[in-house]
Image 1 (cartoon, rainbow, N blue to C red):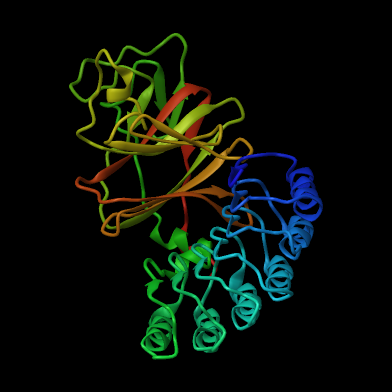
Image 2: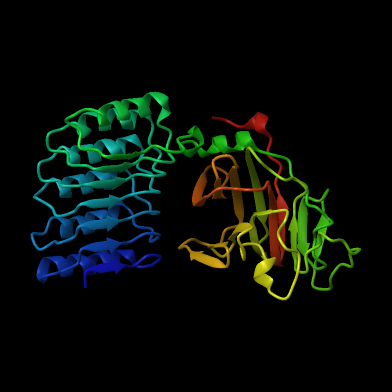
Length: 374
């Protein structure tokens, strides 16, 4: 076996222990290991580092995206990569809370003669300009062999980006590819997303006959008995509704789902089909014209489903950067906002926020931008 992917698995501690046992007791041909969406934490990194330090380790690619690693995990990993010559060439730590301190620890490994990393992915890791400062000497170190660095969806600032690009042009720098796309401040302090809050209203003319709209058309409730709305060309055949607003530019909204709800929260082009023989043509997430997050922890687009290892989501935030082709979904709690999924595409029409209900209700929350703290 050369490739092993165990994404979206519970019991990650037991899995790591088994991997360590395999690397330290038997010959292994494993070249690629992916443990994404597994709640992999610093404690699991302490276990896995034993395998990475083993002379029997043949691992060339390690992917640990969408987990719960912090600076402590980075320190453990950097120590393992610097302990002996390692075959590891590609490392993906995207969507972890590494921050600048974590990047600094990784830089220690990059400058080690025992580290042979060629590709490092740190997308959505809350890196700022200070992280760029740590990377600057590492990139021109005589021991650094990095060819590709992904720092997209962080907040590097123009100064930080300039710093990295100047180093990339240095003749002593081995870096060939540098991704610094979408470096907005909101990716570091996600509460700043609320600065883009918009006012939304559910469009009664689109509501399916099993949806009741109340509270100034901010709440939609699934009604088994059904509502007899008058015929309208925009009305859905299913329990689905769009907002009146067609959005371009940058916008953010939050939705609260009640305890009994089974709902999809997303957005669609107004030109989405409203009914027909094939439900994928008009259901939210079932076609090319709509995208949505389901409260059961799945993402849907064009009749394709992505599964995630998350608890049932009750409070959701959605951020749209229409010109950049970005649609992001977040889990919202009173104290923080946790990233769930980001779509990167090219939008061709304004997007209307939309909802599909199979039970319960959803409510579009009012966000007071004057009370937002940075």
